[in-house]
Structure formats: C-alpha cells, structure tokens
Amino acid sequence: MDYYLKASEFAEKYVAPVGRKIDETKEFPKDIFEKLYAEGFLKLIIPESEGGLGGDIYDHAEVVRALAKESATVGLCYMMHNVGLNVILSVAKDELKKQIIDEVINEGKILALAYSESGSGVYFHYPDTTAKRDGEGWVINGSKSMVTSAEYASYYILIAKTGEGRADTDHFCIPLDSKGLSFRMDRWNGIGLKGNVSCPMYMEDMYIDELYRVGDNGAGMEQMFAFAAPPFVQGLAAVYCGLNEAIAREAIMHAMDRQFPDGSTLANVDTIKLHISKIYNNANAGVSACRASALAARNGDEDALIKILSARVIAIENVVESGRLGMLIGGGRAYSQYRNFARYLADGLAGQVMAPSVDVLHQWIGSVLTDQMIP
Image (cartoon, rainbow, N blue to C red; front, side):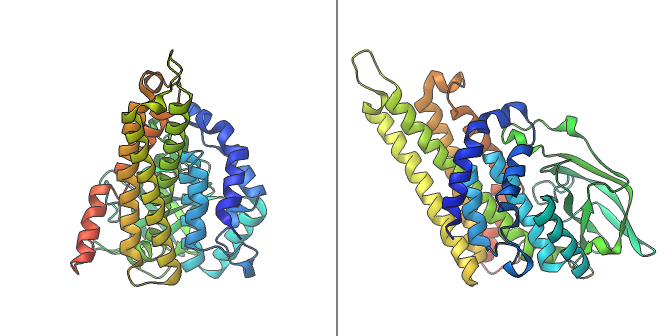
C-alpha cells in the first residue's frame, strides 16, 4: 500500500483545514487523532498477525511526512505514538503487549515518550528520575521536562534510574491514571509546534506494578538506542521534511499571487526565484535523505543508524534556512502573519533544540564515523 498517498489524502481532508487553528489555540489535536484512529493509522506498525497494518519504519516516516506537510504538530504527535508503541511491541511483557495492542486497535488509545529532563537537557538518556523496588512493583520519583501529548496519551514511555551506575536504567510504561502522576500544563508555551502540549510531568511516590517495567533488567539505555531512537530520529526527520515541503508550497503560492500595479508578480523577481529554488532544493534534499535512511533501516543495512542521524540533521538545518527565506519572500504579509511563513519558521526553529539537539546529533555522527561510542 502507498501509505504516503493515503496519509496525504487524509491530511488534505482533515488536517489542512485546521492546521493553523491547532497552533493558535495551543490545544492537542484530539479530533484529528480520533479520525486517525477511525482511518486505521494508529495501528500502522502493529503486525498484521495482531490485527495491525504491518507497517515498518519506512511507512512510519512516509505517514509522518504527509501529516507534517499540513501540520508539523500533528506529524510530531503521531510520530511519538508510533515510537512509544514500537518500544512496547519490541520488549514489553506479552500480557502488557496484548493489552496495549487491543486498546490501540479497539479504543484508539495513543502512546507518548517521557524522556527529557531539565537536568540532562538535550542529552536526556541519563535520567535523574528514580525507580526503586517495592515488593512486586516499583516506586518512581522524579520529573520529565517536556512530554509530548501530555494529558492526552494513555501511556507514557519513560526511562528511570534503577541502579548505582550511570547507565543502570530501565524503561517503564506509565498509565495516564497512575496515582502520583501529574502534569503542569501551565508551563507549556513553546515557540512552535504549539499543539503538541509538551509540558512537564511529575511522579511523586508513584507505584507501578512489575507488569509495566518494559524489557530486561538494567537494559534501558540499550533499549532506547535499539527500539526508540531509530523511529524517533527518523520520525523527526520526516516531520521537518514535511514542514519544508509546506514552506515551498507557501512560497510558490505567495510569489505567484502577489501582483504589482504593472501586472507583474513577485514570481517575476529574480531574487525571489533564487529563494524559491533554494527552498525547493532544501526540501528535495531532505526528503531524499529521509527516504534513503528509512530504506536503509527497512533493509537492515549496516549504516542505517548513521544515515538516520544525518537525515534528521539535514532536514532540520534545511528547514530553518527555508523558514528564513520564506519570511523574506512573504515580506510584510509574513510579518503580519497573513500567510503561514511565521508559523512555519517557529516550527522549524523548535526542531534545533528538540532532544537530541542538532549539536548533539553532530557529536553522535562524528563519534560513529570515527569508531567511538556515542557519548
């Protein structure tokens, strides 16, 4: 199945009409996710044998890109659902896996990640949040700084410190109704992607049954890089490729519509042609890198991880430049937010600091290429 085409048709019908409103109201796009459930997109990566669509990381990236072309917020939130679900499908206990698959397929429940902390910042993989044994379960204390789909997702995948060593960590799947779990929605005020409501999440003496500890003891770091990082970083690359395509579309539309008194248009200006060319080239390069890395991951290529990391860097650095050029093309109309250029620029800027940040990604790429451990 051509998932990009199917997702594009969905996005044009349901997301495009409300894309701007989602960011203006800073509210999670609940109605869109109800439609994503109805159309079967929430079960994209669940195996066909379990009632899902059997999609892989390439399909994941294509759907995310199609959604992000109409709303980067929707693309991001959908991507986070798939990443959280992938952790469950890969390493959760059979009982929990069966439970969550059933709830996703039959109730439309979604998942999210809760990795980032104020202490670890853009690195996020060495947490201060602790999980201590208590009988047949665990007591978790700590906080996460930016949790996408906060208060709306039914489950949050977090990593917590369970031993004395720096890397002694485990994954936990936290149900929304857990006692001791709370969110601070009043602290959410992002400069872009405003509908993803990435507010802080707090755990105070929160008891979690052993069922909700995900994976092998002390394997949190290993699991994160194996099952969360690839679809997460690939998904972010897809989000910003879709956004870059949206900027290109907006730039072309505005340049052709903006007419001068002599009958010529903005598109006739050589400088504007140059800007439009650069934006299009940025988008094309990003999409090409995104697809190439996703195909490498699908095929199990040895260099898949480095290609995924590179694709995200290319997508984000390109979209920031495209956003800047879009503002130049839009001029006063962009400044007054008559067009979408300012919103797109803000969405692009947010991607630079989203953990792992662009600077951290460059460090990781350099480490991998020189046969060093990722720091």
